[in-house]
Every structure is written in C-alpha cells, then in structure tokens.
Image (cartoon, rainbow, N blue to C red; front, side, top):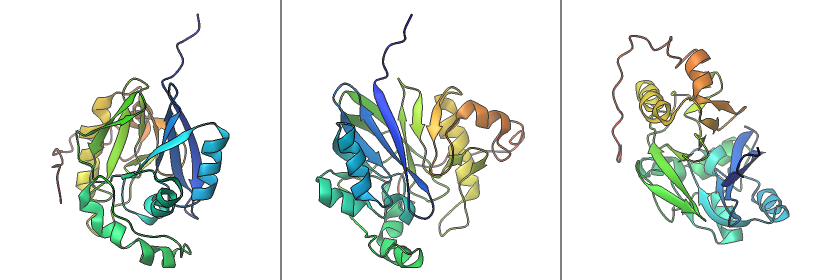
Length: 233
C-alpha cells in the first residue's frame, strides 16, 4: 500500500565559503515556497525554485550570522518576498553583516530589517502548511528553528548538527543556554524528527540522542538544565 504524498517538499543549496545549508521548503498542495537562511547565491536559489515550478512566498531566517542571512536583502529585492525572523535579540548580528562580509570575502552581503520578527510559540503559514517557531538561544541569543509537525521535519540552523552542536564562542553566545535549548525545545518534538542543520548532513533527533558526544542522553546524564527564557536577551 503506497503512503500518502508528503505535504511539504525540501531541497538544500549549499551557499557561501562556509557551505551553509540554505534550505527551501514548500507546500506541495500550492507550490508556495519559503527559503530558509539565504546566506548568498540568490540568483541560483531563484533559478532552482523556478525550475521546480515553485513560487517564492517567504524568506525565513534562523539567526543573524552572515552565512545564514547575508543574502536575504538581495533575495527580497529580487523576489518581493517578506523576510521573517529571526528573534529580535539578533539585531546586532544583522547590523554587522556588511563587516562580516568583508572578512569572509562576501562584499555584497547586506544588513536588513525583517518584515516580521519572531518569538518562541509563533506559527508561520506557508500555503496550506503550518510551521512552529521555537526560540533556541545559545549559539546566538535570537536563534529560532522551524518545525513542521505533520512531516516530522525541522530546520534547526546552527543549534544542532550531526555529531556536534553550535559554537558558543561568539559575542552573547551561551553554552549552557544552547544545551538547554536542545534538550527543552528540540528533544520534546520527538526522536523521529528529521532535521536539516545549518551545515553538514541531515540527521534525526533520535540519532543525536543516542550518539552525539555533546548532547546524547548518556552525555547529559546528571547535568542540570534550565529552560531558556524567551524574549529579547
């Protein structure tokens, strides 16, 4: 017996010298698409969207780092799509994008003002699909992730990777907050959730709970955790 068709589609475009996973998701009923974290390569991303017969409806940002947000202004100008996210605590990172771009050889990277800021508990509608927003500070104070419950799918930016976690050596990073975000915001979504990280291969929450050396159940046994506060940091 064949399974029902998925309500969403997903493709990943590596962008910038840091090979960031720019992720395009779309509602298969309407072909309306959202690009998550366009760090660069707006023309190539739009070309692939057009080739697949999709319509860019929204631009979603997990956090304000250059490789995730540096191409958002260009993509918005080319498409007219609104920029949604991240949480306002990352405003200082967005303001610093042009300087970051000079450091990493991306002189066209620009800052922007989001059409809409996000907070934990918000819901985004894309075509006929709804996406949960979770505020997951730690890597940056305003980091958010996007979760589609029916498909058991999440895009988690630089919170969690296959076998690793986000760096916390940046201004306003917080390692304890990052670990708490993973345990209190990601793990409750379910071990069967497949996620695209900001860099590297796709994995599942269950796999990371079994084997990730930083946040596996074994690694965190006995570690006290606090639920991260939502709202401006």
